[in-house]
Image 1 (cartoon, rainbow, N blue to C red):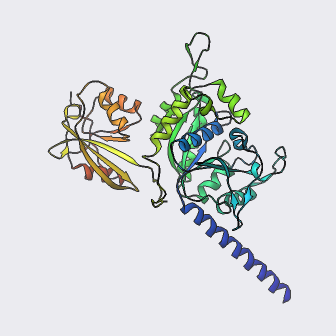
Image 2 (image 1 turned 135 degrees about the vertical axis):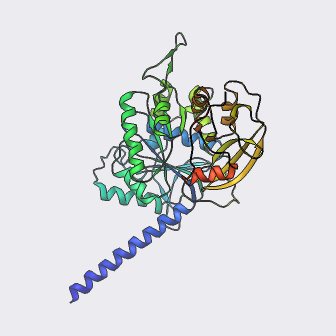
Image 3 (image 1 turned 90 degrees about the vertical axis):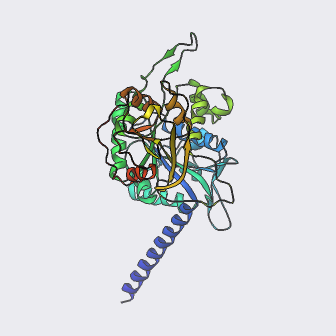
Length: 405
């Protein structure tokens, strides 16, 4: 009898500990607006380098950023950021993330280990608990963005993130190689299986400028990532050129973007960071934590307040901003003069993600896709709000693409 009571007491304590952990995880996540899992289908594509430099670029633009390294067996984030030492603890017995700058903090298994060269030999259940502790036992505070650097593949770590952080979105990193692109497709299908939104795809090591003649050299090819994103129906975030200085800076824990501010690599990271969100959240603004929280923008050519089939020659566009699957704002704008390539660039600069049209020539569709804008053709002549709601609810019925040449 006494043994039964002892076992029952132990079970109750374990249950209470699990409930406390669940509450701590929930409390931490509620203070973080956007969560991104940076993943890759295979190793060697520069995923951690992209995680680190994207975090730095976002922080430089004024966003409050956390970087969580869940690559348990090969944690490289602290070394790339030049962080040394171990995490401290505050008066509430919460771990304090290691600061890189005023706007960027990081946590890694390496910042919890006295010896940086010890091998971590853990199975799945232990990893699952550690990742939960990285969230619930760390004083992240209010963040605009949490980037989660995971190991390559679709194993325990990304699966745990998908299970624990229900509104996480994936940023997939690849190189232009066909082998890497094949693995990317597996990553995308993994996200579909676990019902994780894919925020976008980054093509890393995309071209290299010869230091002697300045001519571009396609070390691993170019454009494969963008083509794959288009084929799979996901957002293409950008191409990052190969630069040998990225390697030396990462090995030395020196900021590439600070030391090579004029590099095309720095420019691309800045563009990606700038296009991810509208503006940094101010301290007195509430933090939203709903699924798919990044802003979407729709463009619809109008005539008499409804969609017109004459896309290229319309006199005004409705630009609708959507957040949390709700229309938050609507503008009526006059487009620039109709010339090849002008409208795609204009709408891209307005951060438009989707164009809904009656008809459009294939060349125009290609130009929009090159500007990372999805095109829906054959839509009926309805009010812009009806079209956008239909798109969001998957009830928009599109007919044939009737070109308006």
